[in-house]
Length: 389
Ligand code: NAD
Ligand code: MG
Image (cartoon, rainbow, N blue to C red):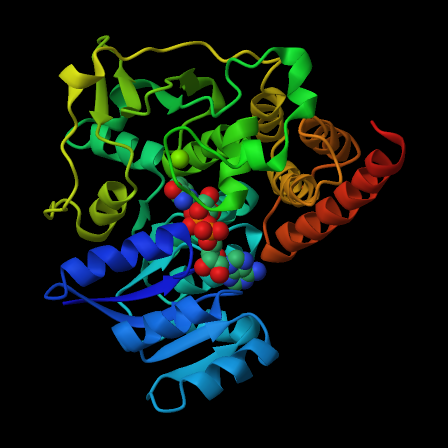
């Protein structure tokens, strides 16, 4: 029996993880859950999975949850301390890190410090604090298992091979809903249009990141740390069908890819059980029905966010944390209708340009860069709102 703490259980990844738990109740038990705004769903999940504890970010919400769950034995916690307690309590064997954004950083680090294996969906943690996280993973001798479908594909394609034989990683990207839209119309993109992803059903922030391709930029940085390879060895191909989830090219020219239908349950289950595979109730991949798989280069004019992520990685230190913070702010502003779609990369670029990166030996440097990046991006966004950029 594997005991799981699920951080961000009410989200898209968290809910998929709970579906796997429900289908394999002989293998998994839930010891902690955390959520945020959706208290109805969180309360339902607590009744269904009876965790020992549950946490939400603020006290007022915790009080409301307590009232609703007073007939259960579940302990209700709040704030960073509550999230950290859920991430690090003794009973958990593994933590699924599925909070969105840099809010996931401190609880994920707490899980690693407590010696837990972590199934990582929260890519922003590795983007903001990659070197620090990987150093703690080594020091605490825990496993950091990728949930992100591209990284899971690479992880699977690396099994049984020598890392020294890798020539490059090829991350695939769907290209999102605006891959073929005339460039001069990209400014008119509305939040509603950007929230419709052609292949995947995900949370709002990652769906916008997929449309700008910042998601792929964040994944390049995530891959750099997870697989310990320099940016020059990490390429991106657009692959609209989202069937090949990513590939590894070896020095002899062999390319190993992992394929499947676009459903996050496959990579989540692999992170929970690898090297074992467990049966999942998913339709099979029907390649004949698909007919063809296509691959294209990324157009940097359409997707400037990808180049910005490579640039942040090249600058190193706190630059990726600032990139991530500026992106989170710009995406929120776009979703509120305050800025245009193509203002997102401009705000990130202007924020990065103002930043002097420093090395990140300590968590405080990351938190300070995150704070500075948010503040600066918010200031630039308010200028965009009033005057345009
Ligand atoms: P989501 O928006 O559906 O869910 C986010 C979860 O985080 C919710 O449970 C929410 O309550 C919680 N949360 C949000 N803000 C919080 C805060 N400030 N403090 C504490 N909890 C908070 O997001 P998602 O699509 O499930 O994505 C989660 C993470 O997984 C992201 O980092 C995303 O990049 C990554 N990811 C998602 C997918 C996917 O298919 N959805 C695929 C790959 C990676
Ligand atoms: Mg992904």
